[in-house]
Length: 416
Image (cartoon, rainbow, N blue to C red; front, side):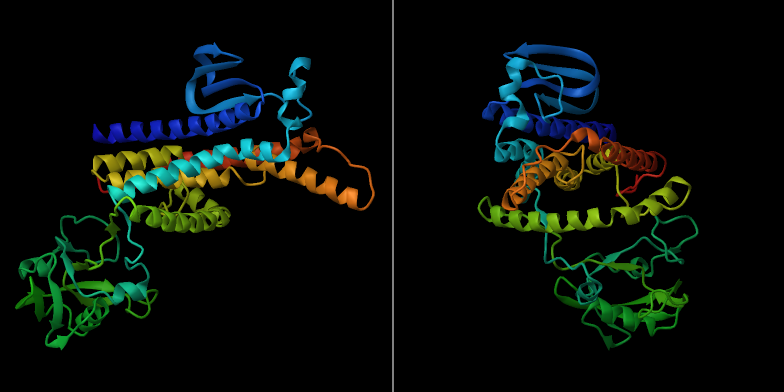
């Protein structure tokens, strides 16, 4: 039940975000005096609507977005009444049209920023000092988390019947213990511990020295045998090595909460990281199409492949089901920021395409004026329709691919 609630809640959060996106266009357009005739949440058949002033507001039957109709977005619009011509959007100054067209993305950025600040003072934010690179992880003290079993092959899965019991658990090691020596060989980091353990013959006993609550302790563990590649060559041939059945618990906290004032700076830093990661994700988007296709055709789903609204909602459901509200909020933040950036790409029919054309017209008019040529006027949107249709077709195909992958081979963050 919690999972279903989470899915519905996240889908509703997305719908509200998109509705506010369109409201951003509407509010700014009205503020500048442009005429807005329709504002609807959803698509398809109308469930209900009402008119207030010159605008019709309503809800449609398919809750997959929304739209806002501003009169005369392009000079080629042929549905503008003569009385509305002075209020047609294309007649307004460039900066006003830019504000209106970017208001949707600005709304997404605003939602992300607010959610980040709220998370910073309540649930916390990912700690930028948390070890993430291999060298940082290997330099961490060998503070352990005791596993229930040892998996012979190098795969990420739950324990299964037939797996070896964890030697660490049998030796009464506990979560949070810090390994200090293996068979008398001193270790000061996780990397040292791994190297010392590899020196012990698999299947034999080893003396493990450790700290528990500041007290020095010692135990004997009968090590298991697993197949692993060399530490200095992860792609090398896997061989039998000793295993204790433990993982690393970083001493640096992975999440940090802040006071209301501190949270402002932390939120700004997190936004900067989010912007960098979003741009990087957009640049790598074409590279992710083959792995997505593999996931649809029976291959393993790459955790780094894009997800659709369906996949995001499923992950939101998992987060709620596991009481991981910080993950739920991070998904909401990331999705809003990504949509905000994506919508500003200079491609029709995206808002960024309209902004790019408006600025291109201004730059071209300025240039022609400088060289003494007549202003060529406005760009003919009708001539750009083949390119627009191509973008819609590619976008639709990509959306269909991600939705299909999210339905038949979804990404999961938690074991269910």
